[in-house]
Amino acid sequence: MKTACIRILFLFFIPAWGYSQSSHPICGNDLFSAMLRKHYPALQDNVDATFESALHAGTPRNNEPMIVHVIVHVVWKEAAENLDESIILDQIRVLNEDFNRRNADTVNLRPVFQPEAGSPGIQFELADIIRVQTDVDFAVDILGTNLLPEVKHDALGGSDALDTEQYLNIWVCKIQPIEIFGIVVGQILGFAFPPNNLLNWPENSGAPAPDEDGVVIDYRVFGSNNPNPIENPDGSGNIIVKGRTPVHEVGHYFGLRHIWGDGGLLGPNDCAQSDGIDDTPYANAESAFDCDTTKNTCAQIEAHYGMDMPDLIENYMDYASEDCMNMFTRNQSTLMQNILLGPRSGLLTPFSGVSNLRDQIALRIVPNPSEGHFTVKLETINNTQGLVRILDAHGRVIMTRDRLTLFPGTHTLSFDERPLAPGMYFVEIRTTQGAMAEKMIVY
Image (cartoon, rainbow, N blue to C red; front, top):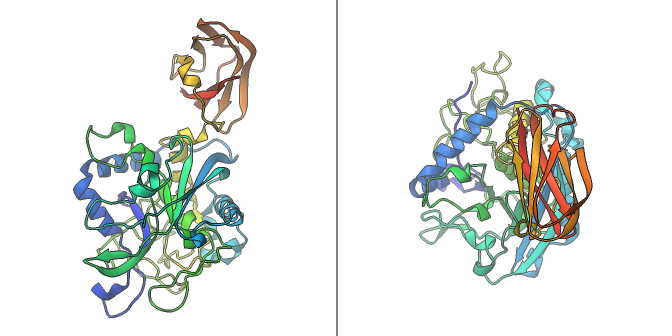
């Protein structure tokens, strides 16, 4: 087992003037980790605990896709930043292909890694596109605490998140170049927060709020059909854009680390750093936005497959060229599935939409967790009609009580005709006023 260690993760590059004479993309994750460790000390322990729990959680019982609804916030200042809908739809297509191993370039994976390729089985559905014109320049202050909260709040010139428990919110904007003491040193392409047990944070910990959870992407690397170029920092031309930066960042959102383990500070590590995943070979540094299949930065280490392995540059969690990336491993896929069935299970709530139904009806499940027999209690303040459904984690209807007429007061519905198998379910109520659901666990 590799040592498990999770940090808030970012995809960005910096010319390596501070490390060597060459100029190539290198990882700046440690800069951000230092900032977070200093200002948000409670964050690391909670993220580590979430990661460890997900590593050992049970895996899904079948291969049906788990559906995640996506809100894309396009926050734009110049016309080019207001991406056409076709670009957004293309990015959703890329996410669905890559997270279900339906991408055509799977054939490019080297044979030695073919047995380790996995499919997370996550399906992304576009729920809404929210467009906001702004006059704000979105810049990260890596010497301070700024993680671009402005782009995530209407009042600060951005766009308010839509229920981060039920939706994957993706903000697309122009991210300004990184400056240190007025000197431009790099460009962030995107960043994401992994699950971090928000409800378990100490009071006043100062960490990012729930309404800032999600993914931020620079508008130039969103969609494979994006017409806006972005230069490689080594001066070798434009970065190849295939929509894989959002794939990489959504991987972080579902708990994955960089494949080289984020060791070192502006340089290689000692081949002892780890991403916590057992079927990803060790590497001592990220790729340089290239596709070097000869790269073997941790030679003689036989921790995987019982032999010395080259670096897995085809993995989405490396910094290889986007036309070289084509896979998640099986264990990476399992971790993301467990995260989605655990800390991010609210994303699987099988309906979308916002209503004020909670102001009119209180829904309780007794007992919860249960052994498979349970009662649903509804407390209503108005006359209404509707139905109650029990759905599994994939949105399939298991039981229904329909044609309900609910008067003000308490209503009890018993679901004991057959016990449910162990797993996670949702109890959903729908009325003419809206819909809501609560999670239920059967052990």
